[in-house]
Length: 310
Ligand SMILES: NCc1[nH]cc(CCC(=O)O)c1CC(=O)O
Image (tube, rainbow, N blue to C red; front, side, top):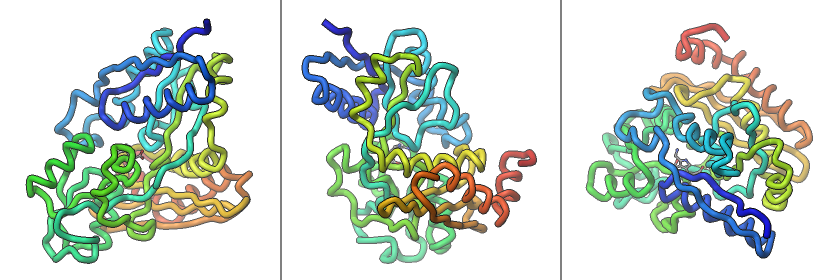
């Protein structure tokens, strides 16, 4: 009997869905393999009422999972690629990227069909600086209000009447069986998605040959390339979650089209750019777009937020 594969996972409905998805894919690829979930609570799960940008960012949701892998209490962790920090602890890395779900943002409302239909003064909920920035820039007449919690909590706050509409990721809603709540998808022009949005990635110990071999069939090459370009752009910008950053790659055959955006949280400035080139150069294209954005004004925005020179 081979040893079970243990998946460290947070316990939010979305995290559990993703862990179950990887469990099912592993079991389908390797009949007879036993896969177990190891549910955990992270610091990020305990701090629910403060905007993430203020409490130290996305790393709060992964640290405990990584410690479990390093200590051998778990073998892999499954992440939403948009929540995965750029750097990994020594010995761990992102080894598999699964096929991307819908990468766009979703307009969710009980009264309005789309963003255009919202009247002046309508209250829109989102805590993502990226979504806030683009909303404020394109619709300065709207009132943007913070909205945190897991997907179900956010929907409940909308249903309570606290907001006229909220913005969520299409992917999360579809995965949780709530695709019917999406009134319309925001186009990439309206709301450029976050780096890696809609993609699930698997982190593992880099020297664990057995696990790497088991994971290999779960990888999706086109998604890997797109996310590599988006993450390279982000890494050139030293992007964290205190700055509105969007990055979205599309593949047309072997041609990659990467769009990027950096803005002021209040939407008072947005720097946008794009590059095209061969998919085999995904990371160079991402770095190139990052540099292009820096030169076009992102540098000043980022330096002001980070409080240091880039
Ligand atoms: N930041 C929270 C988060 N992380 C991943 C998703 C789901 C979409 C995805 O997998 O990219 C969501 C919810 C949301 O943004 O609405």
